[in-house]
Length: 209
Image 1 (cartoon, rainbow, N blue to C red):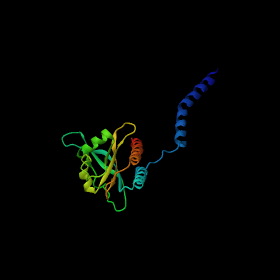
Image 2: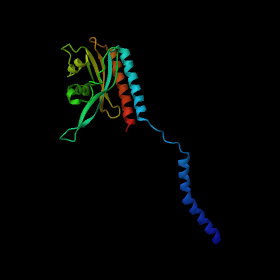
Image 3: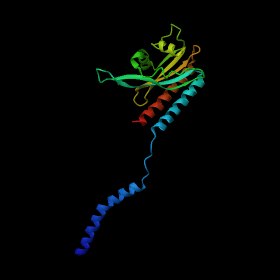
């Protein structure tokens, strides 16, 4: 190989090694599909619509007066401690005609005020109160809140993250006009719906991480 051929080979190798990666990166930038632009408001509304449709189905199927979902959230810090204050709020709610909503009442409520009810949900997964005026039925500290919003009967299910089993919130079904004793098949239906909604919320929360 002559000196000229050797020089040409070295020059070619240098050009390929120096320019090649630049060309590849340029091509990636030029022809790659742009990342989709996400709109957090639209995404949140879409998720809310999915959940609200499920709540409306429960409302219609059982002839209930109110169906709602509460979720736990961070409520700030204690004054003399870095520990987070655990609170809950009603984030999703559907109501029958003429029934007042409760979301504005149950907003940023310290979880400690309903510790007996949450403890029961953690242990057994549900609370069934067919008549708040029946003193033989345990209400687990829920009677005062029920009276404030006019509920005569409430059935509450815990919502748990399907991946981590973390306690995320509650599904509640209320009757305000009269007491309501649900049949066993209706309770089974509600338990299945609670699991379905737990799945939706688990997925939504996972998407946001």
